[in-house]
Length: 148
Ligand SMILES: *[C@@H]1O[C@H](CO)[C@@H](O)[C@H](O)[C@H]1NC(C)=O
Image (cartoon, rainbow, N blue to C red; front, side, top):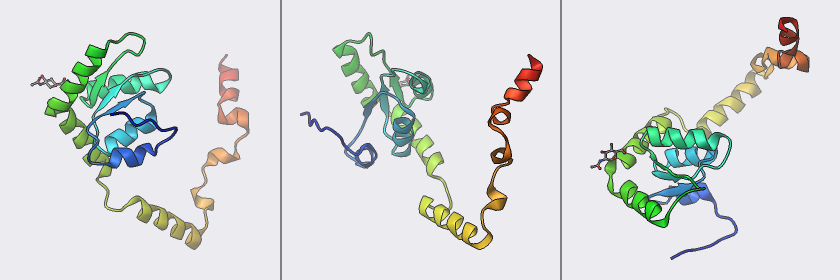
């Protein structure tokens, strides 16, 4: 029962109600999309923020973290069964999803409001003072140079 494709729109797939669980590498976008669509996860982190996000997911009962360098088929199967059968995982990620989605306005309305605001008042007042700094000031190189 595998469908292998060169590319699929992950966010649209996660939005499908037939998807019950997501086996992922735990990248930031994947984790945000999992939370948004309230899909419990099994995370095989590889690098960067993935390891931290995988532990976060496990700590917050969004799912289970596994070690890609050291795993057995039985372990994956058992974790899939565990995550699907234990309501804690679905309930925990659903609560985070509800928190994430709890906004008075939609993303489209917020973008529309921001565009209207800039059309009305321009954008000078929105620019950060950081854009006036030299690069070495921006990364605080001058401060560290003095400290060292
Ligand atoms: C469900 O999973 C949670 C989180 O791992 C655990 O604390 C709880 O004991 C599990 N419940 C059952 C009935 O196995």
